Image 1 (cartoon, helix red, strand yellow):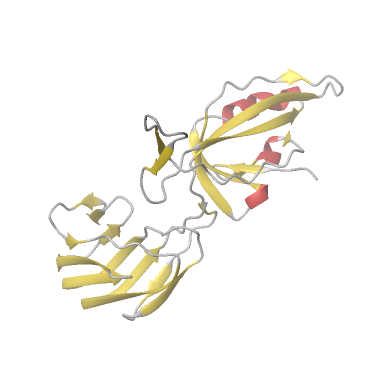
Image 2 (tube, rainbow, N blue to C red):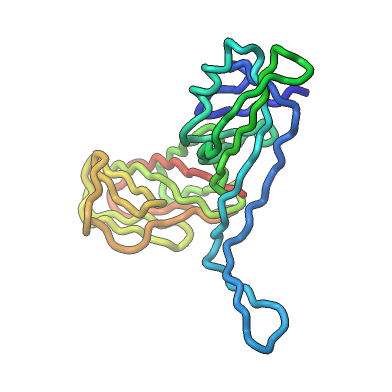
Length: 232
């Protein structure tokens, strides 16, 4: 079976790139500190925090079909963005191509030019296709299908003093007007894309794994939630 990957929305086979090795599915390493206690055999380990994992390298040996296609492949395989491997085609992850890419003529097929790509991958994966959830009723159920809590982007329609609660975490906005968005990952409250300092109290909520609800107080007519589900 010929494999493929998608880099910044473009499939590798559209760039005349072929490879046959299955890219492994990686569970990332938890970030921990190793503590040596004098006189005690072995080491203790202490996690840096909850759900903190290290980035890792995915190496993909490839071949370009035809010398004429090598320049386009070289121009495409650079920088940072999002990568999807066909072993987990429904997920994407942030990555950067970190190695120098050198193509050499294949020893048995002179039309193929071999190289190797190293993707330095963020440990957290997310859905390859963005999802939005429109909520018009306080108390609406949410279901997180990922393996980690999600930090959503919430577009809020309403006015006045409002609060939004998910799984016991409440964000309070004393004076909501039009164009407000809560970025729960970066803990920013934005109005027309501009961060609003001192315009909120409480906590930016996250969506826990499994089932929860989103509720509010005040004059909110609609929430549009980009949940940004996360999985290892």
